[in-house]
Image (cartoon, rainbow, N blue to C red; front, side, top):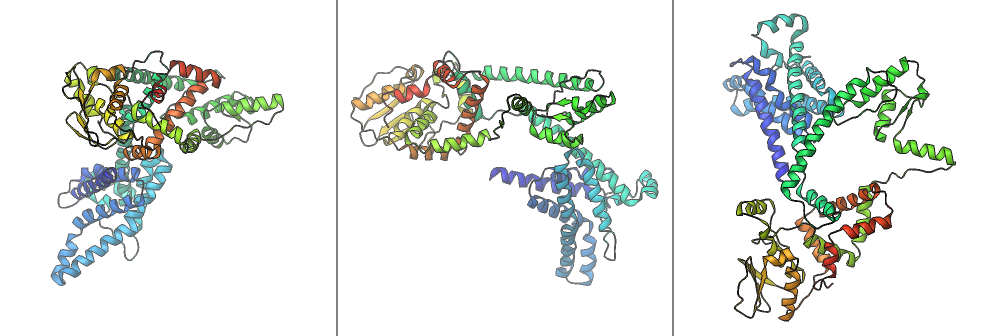
Length: 546
C-alpha cells in the first residue's frame, strides 16, 4: 500500500510540476525557454506509467492546472454576463473535453507505443502530441489555445522559421527536446539504479547459508568481507564492460570469419551480428556455411526476423545445435525439455509441504538456522552491535521485539512447544509453572531454585536450546509441540515471500548440481560432508520431538 501511494504521489507531483512550468512559458510571464524542459516530468510519466488509471490521473491534473490557468479569462468574462455556477461549469466542460478527447488518448497511445519501441520513444511522443494538437486545431470547434508552439511568440528565431515549418513545427521541436531529455534522464537513472542495486537481505541470507554449506569449516561469511567481495566483483564487472565494448567495436572491421560477440544489457548485439553477416556475404561466403549460436531462443527468433533468414543460415542455441548433431549421428529423436525450473520447484515444494514430517523439519530449519543470528559476544563494541540490530529485526514467532537474538531463539523455542510465557526485560516468566528464565551475557550466581539462566556463551557453543530443554525437563515443564501446519501458517504471516526464498535456495542447489560434474549420489555425499549440518543437528537433538 505504501509503495502504491508513493507511486501515485510521484505522478501527481510530476504532473503538477509540468503544468506549472509550461504555464510560466505563456503570458503574462512569457518565460519561453522553460517550455523546452517544462514537459519533461509529464513525458517521464508517459514512459514509465504501467496502468491506464495513471494516465487518467496525470492528464486530468495537467489539463486542470495548465488550461485552468490559461483559460481563467473565460470564467472571468462569463462572470460578468452569467452566474458563477454557469461560468465555472463552462470552464469545467472545456477541461473535461480536453482530457477525454485529446490529452488522455495522446498520453495513452504514446506510452503504449513507447513501451514496445523503447529505443524510439523520444520521437514517438512528439509525433503523437503534435498530431494531437493538429486534431484539436481543426474544424468548426477547433481549440487552438495552449498549443505549445505559441509559447515562442516573442522569440525571434522561431518566429522566422515558423514561416517554413509552421506553428506545429515549432510544437514538434519543443516536444522533441522534452522527450529527448526525458529519454536520457531515464537511461542514466536505470544505469545508476542497476549499479547501486543491493542484494535483498532474504536472498543474501539464502545464498550465504547455501555457500556456507559447501565450506569445509563452519565459519560464517562476515558482512565486511561480503562488502569487499561485492566491491571487487563490481570493479571486475566494470572492466569487463569496457573490454566487451572495445571487442565488439572491432568485430565488423576485421577479416576474421569466426567471432565471439560478447553482449550485455546495453549492447546492440543484433546490429553487430547483422553487420558481421553482411560482411561475410560480401566476401562470397555461402549462407549455409554461416553458423550463429546465440544464448537464448528469443535471440534466435529475433535474428531470424532481422536477417530475414529463410532457414539458409543456421541460427541455433548451443543446446539445440548439440541436440541436432546427436539426433543426426544416432538416428534418435531426442527433445529438449522446456520446463520452467522455478515453476517445477514450486510444484514439487507444494507437494512436499503436504507431508507433515517434511513440513516440521522445514519449519525448524527456517526458525532456527535459515538466518544465522549473531550472539552479542560476537561483537567487539556497542556501535557494531547497534548497527546489526538496526539492520535485523529481533522479532519472535509470537510477534514480540526482544533485546537480542539469543532471546529470539529462547522465545521461539517456548512458542513452538506451546509453553506459555510473559516476556519483560530479559526475563521469561512461564505462566503455568512459575519458572523464570533469565538471559545473561556474563556468569551470574543463581539465587532461586525456580530460575533458569541462559548464557550468551551457550549460544556460541551451540548448546543454548539443548541446555534449556534439559533444565525445563528437570523442572517437569510440559512440552506440547505445535503442529507443523500452525507453525508454517505463522511463518508465512511474518514473511509472505518465504516460499519464494525456499524455492531460490532449492534452485541454487540444483544449479550447483548441474555445474559440479557429479552424479546425484556423489553430490549428496559431498553436500553432507561439507554442510554445517544445521538441520541434521537440530532434528537429531533431544528437544526436537514431533
